[in-house]
Image (cartoon, rainbow over all chains, first blue to last red; front, side):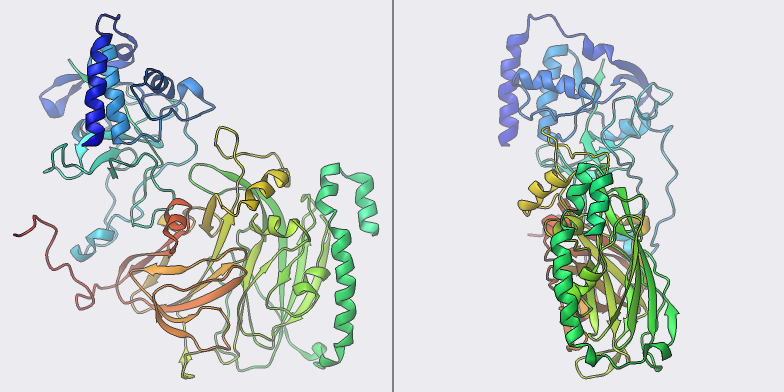
Length: 226
Length: 381
């Protein structure tokens, strides 16, 4: 894919950074979490979503093409308006700067991180399987309002913040499990509810004429394997 | 111009700006009055003998209680609209506007009468407001739709009576003069009136048509100014956005196009409701800009596209056109349960700017009308 090719080029450029001291700030913003769903394996999880400030560094080093959004919150705001390809650019850059095995969380990991905040699923609106397409209508929680500073929403017992905020987070899980990354047209973004987002979308629609409720904003957080 | 003198002596210069158009408009009012007097011999009804009823107005999308067919004679329907300048949030991101709201809602409430009835309106301008307001009823006759006779400053009220001689759905809006006319209208200052034929609605062959439910969808275009960083500007008080707003309005590109005053005002928990078999009348008003309602998954069985019940309705429509400055009506019987989307079928406006409503319909699915014959799966060779 065209954008993948760009990412590969950037990866090649990144090798020239070898030899620079590694940026410790990525690791400092992460906490270890044992994943029960994965035989107790430990992953490192960013306490907060990736910020505009961090995105700006990637942009200034020309590794991220997407211009950082302007925000009065400056350093403390999560970056939003980023599509799947933008996020891949950032991850490639962040890996080279940090020396860490950074990646997006899978949906299963995201759900486990969010387990203390998850709400019980309400009764479906329609029980007839022929109305399955409308069964979840109006049951999705969609917090609105302006983008707020990182740390403005809940923190889980694992120490992870803002999973229940108004910025949804890209996961690495394709909305159709049988598709691999080469063919996946949409990934699951998770937040107050789960939404399949096209890889091209950075700003979900405000009105929405389908029956679902779109996420308010799209951002992301990183995890790292040992 | 005693009111102007009074205001010149006491209020801030900005407020003077906001009422400055009163002088020219009052001159027009004088002309309109003399014209009306020349034709006064048309009015022969002894109003003192007519029954009076008070109509309790309700916030859209609902309509006040009313009969579809009346057998009694004309009456005087008394309504009160209290104008409130209030800060409202118009989308999920928290964008604000100082709305000018008839009875506190955007759009203002719908008034329902029958042909031959009189509407007697008391229009109140709250003393906490900053601006002069009035009302122009497209359903009325004379004096700029009543606009010339209803100018009220903060703390004032006025009473206007007009006879409903044209059956149909019509918009009303504020029209204080000059640039204030579009400025007030795009700050939410509009609503609708339905004048039903005394013997009710009819199809193209004259057979009676009834509705089980009626919803009023007021579409509103907003033009919110932006900061240099692209975010929407916020203002401390009503009218402060005048100059910035006019600049955005001049582009004719709205920042928001919404139903019932806000993105999502008629979706989710606030979605309209119906049952399979219900005949639902949708009244769509747009006081400023063209629109094109469409029910995704449904139709318009009987549509008065221009909104005037003296004309036969069109049947079986896909999408209908609402001219800016008018209201139209569509009657539809729901035949399938589920969720329907009622949109302005300029889909950019529906999805990106907010002009989407939903209808939740209960009932039993009809396989004859539609069924999924096979679920999505790998293509067969």
